[in-house]
View 1: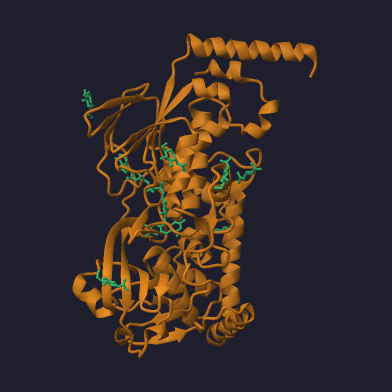
View 2 (view 1 turned 120 degrees about the vertical axis):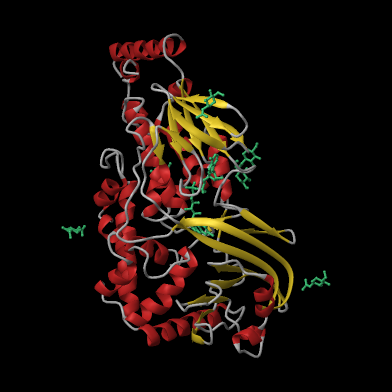
Length: 494
Ligand SMILES: Cc1cc2nc3c(=O)[nH]c(=O)nc-3n(C[C@H](O)[C@H](O)[C@H](O)COP(=O)(O)OP(=O)(O)OC[C@H]3O[C@@H](n4cnc5c(N)ncnc54)[C@H](O)[C@@H]3O)c2cc1C
Ligand SMILES: *[C@@H]1O[C@H](CO)[C@@H](O)[C@H](O)[C@H]1NC(C)=O
Ligand SMILES: *[C@@H]1O[C@H](CO)[C@@H](O)[C@H](O)[C@H]1NC(C)=O
Ligand SMILES: *[C@@H]1O[C@H](CO)[C@@H](O)[C@H](O)[C@H]1NC(C)=O
Ligand SMILES: *[C@@H]1O[C@H](CO)[C@@H](O)[C@H](O)[C@H]1NC(C)=O
Ligand SMILES: *[C@@H]1O[C@H](CO)[C@@H](O)[C@H](O)[C@H]1NC(C)=O
Ligand SMILES: *[C@@H]1O[C@H](CO)[C@@H](O)[C@H](O)[C@H]1NC(C)=O
């Protein structure tokens, strides 16, 4: 670097220091919600600002619960910890992978600690219409044979449609990867529609999955069985979900899935710890009022906070935040998923079988009226007569019903999740920017698809919107800080 340039740089930096110390108002960014969305916004805001900027904005985060993580949460059964909400990550979830490295978390192979490739059965309420082999062996060679035999079984039933399904998923995953392109190549998106169109994903939200799969040439049998099993497990819904939610759901049934040892919630926890955030746990925001130059956030604790930028990082469909002035977002219903955890043993009679060992480790279901659950899976096999199961259902599982499905239960835990949007193609999207000012909505993107990674991707875009719209500068990541020297000049715009 030439000496004169160096002097100019020093001058600019000292200028900005003195500005930060004297004339500049200290902005506060308030984030409502401590899930992966809210914690990612905090992380990317810090990443996109130099260490200088730490002096320029504070981050406050509000969480109504006593713990962070939101829909990433664990449940404890007899002292053992299992994922209660979001459980699996895809090998191409690049932000989640980076968080794992940054935070020094440990990757765990799929939640099926029961076995590496669980046996699958498709239950229609009366019988298993399809079953894979569930032969247990410690010999890798035998395991390989079993998995090969299962591929043959799948192929015999569904034929080349399996390849078409694979291609459909790969195309969508490939388009999604565009969201990791560098900032030079990737615009800052002011709306969800624009963001989806840019990646070539928007069309997939305009038709339902059933239609998209028919267009892709899939056999109705594959759509109504295997695909439906997967959408019921991942979104508690049928082929009526959008093509995009369906593609994301199917990607969640591919190989190489992973999670974080000890619980995925640690991603949110670690990001918050690393982002210099003032965290207000057990404090619910009940109103957000625009006061012109700032927002006033009032909480149920009777506190009132002044924030120049406000970020809503929770679905607004079931929360009672009062906005002044009123905001307008499309009506959206959340799909409730009841997650029931049972330590005990399934009753083979319920499935018309003789032995527990004949029940597949993953019981998936198709769309049949009055089928009381969407899936039952073995989370852990303690021994032949003692297992931990997870059941997903659209309605609560009452004791009488559980007693008919299980021969005994030693522990039962029920969680009612306002889980994800009830998808409805063609999807309509809430705005990222709720009031044309500085009130942002991360979860507008959930109508495209709801996953930990899509929340992080939406959060990254929201952080860029804030950097450019409020702080008046395009965000630069720390890697290209070296070429960036305009801090002083840009700050003047504030
Ligand atoms: C059963 C289930 C299984 C799932 N499986 C997967 C999976 O395998 N893989 C995957 O990637 N995704 C999965 N998902 C989806 C995933 O959980 C979500 O997409 C993601 O966690 C959403 O994160 P978020 O930060 O946007 O919202 P949330 O995690 O819901 O965070 C919002 C937070 O805001 C808080 N809050 C709400 N209102 C207020 C208020 N007024 N004041 C203060 N705080 C407030 C809430 O308490 C919550 O902690 C699953 C979801 C469920 C329910
Ligand atoms: C990361 O985790 C490993 C094992 O948990 C530990 O040994 C190591 O010290 C940690 N490194 C850092 C930088 O925290
Ligand atoms: C993940 O981190 C690596 C190393 O820090 C970085 O080069 C890469 O761009 C990051 N990936 C994404 C998607 O941000
Ligand atoms: C989406 O659909 C529109 C209208 O049918 C079409 O013009 C456009 O080419 C499609 N885009 C993609 C990426 O398929
Ligand atoms: C973040 O900090 C809290 C409080 O110090 C701690 O309990 C928690 O374990 C930390 N999270 C992670 C992922 O290290
Ligand atoms: C928020 O709290 C302040 C201070 O108590 C109060 O003046 C204001 O009316 C409250 N706003 C709303 C919308 O309740
Ligand atoms: C179930 O609980 C009973 C009573 O608490 C106990 O005796 C029994 O060993 C438990 N069974 C299993 C399989 O854990």
